Length: 168
Image (tube, rainbow, N blue to C red):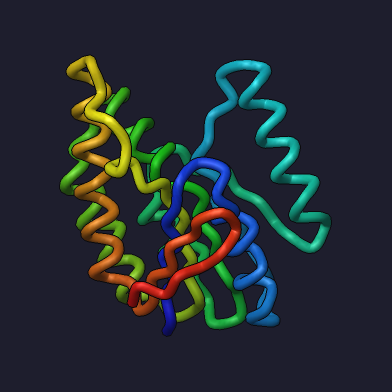
């Protein structure tokens, strides 16, 4: 089945684009949230995304076991929207998980999916080199995850200023 990887900068419109694409399938939409609400700002962002999706969407929170969640909820009548891989990488990094193994499991789940899978991620490699080691490691890990997911996805769109550019 088709898989879509939506990549872009912060506040580029990638989540809105991914949501529109999921809704356009006509399938039952399921939002797989990787965010964890650590503070009031993040709680507000999560609430804003929930309000934008509306009541037609079901939501599950999956900060770490992403591949397992895709396998568990993947059916031909469901459009899965994973938002976002950047936060997932953060969760894996901070909990000292094997990011390479988790990414391999994720790409295998996407490749074997029977329904639509849409994944969203930030492009983190277009800015300045981060000044501390943890931020540099995050940037490097997120970049590697993005490369592997882009290779596995059947379609890749880059979003900038709310406009999409088809990459693959």
